[in-house]
Length: 243
Ligand code: BV8
Ligand code: ZN
Image (tube, rainbow, N blue to C red; front, side):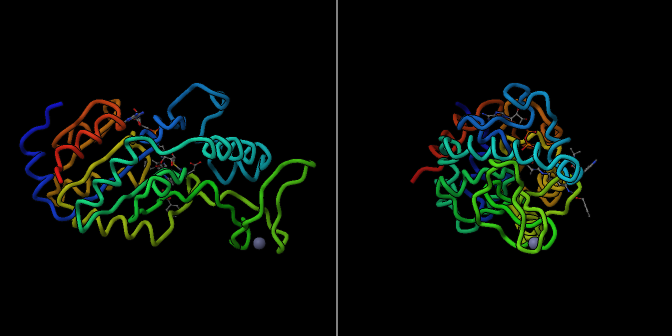
């Protein structure tokens, strides 16, 4: 596949590279994206389920959704898109991988400098006191997991309307504000504040690349938009990096 010379130039010249990923990069691993309307959860809207209110109203349904996703993630592996990002990270001294995904696949692939903006689906914590809960969560026996403080245990992810973890969020904007090359990969660029990061990068003069299966709000502003699957395109970028 052909890449514009301007992209190849910045790929070799850049010292500070930032990548933002969304659910699209895990699709080829078999993890449904939020926009997929197939599968068991088609009748539920994640915007409805990934909220504090849904958990307060119907903690069992929300736990069923997360346990379904946890089991699904247990059986999948990183795909060539995740692995290509590991190779790209090795090529730069200053590389930051910001992910909206909660599936942990970047870490399993071997990426190192990862900022998980929305938490990690395999972790649980107390809704009331925030204590981490390492126990196995099962819904057998009808009960719901509770904390020693009496609080309700919840998945340790960021729900809509909740603030993002301060360290990950500030780290992400700090890297974005000094990026020379910013790649937005497999995200519909609709969820904020993550979706603002590529725009900030563009504003401070970074070369903005989008790798996605469909156009997004970023497509019109980026320097280079690649229509296709991240599992196919990212290995092509690795090839252009050379040794
Ligand atoms: C906050 C964890 C504030 C849970 C998630 C109006 C305007 C702007 C913002 C808002 C607004 N109204 C409300 C808000 C705020 C809201 C928001 O942005 N809403 C959106 C929907 C408008 N944001 C929040 O609530 C955030 N918090 O703002 O707090 C605040 C401030 C102060 C004090 C208190 C509060 C919290 C957002 C985090 C929510 N949690 N996940 C869980 O996972 O269960 S978000 C969740 O959805 C995912 O993590 C992910 O981030 C998001 C879905 O986005 P994508 O990753 O992009 O996935 P998607 O399916 O949409 O797209 C995939 C793309 O990949 C597609 O385009 C597809 O074409 C492409 N693709 C598919 N296959 C491939 C591919 N591309 C390449 N290769 C392939 N093979
Ligand atoms: Zn507690």
